[in-house]
Length: 102
Image 1 (tube, rainbow, N blue to C red):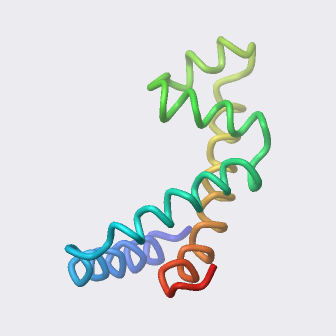
Image 2 (image 1 turned 135 degrees about the horizontal axis):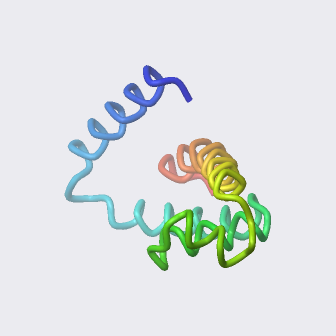
């Protein structure tokens, strides 16, 4: 994703957050559900393991690489691919969820 695209997405998200700051609990639940589905259906088992260790277990790339006897760059590329797959899924699914379409 280009820096300009990211900045536009971030600006749009911040604007949306300000507009819906007090009424977003349903949307948050929907987004959490979408993330759960994406983690299950949109990434490989290896990507899921690496993401879980990296984000939920607070392990760094070096430690994950050592744990699975992989090169650090391989783990890094796998994480990048997983984030890309999740982003694609959530970007389009979230728009539908936020509009009330499941």
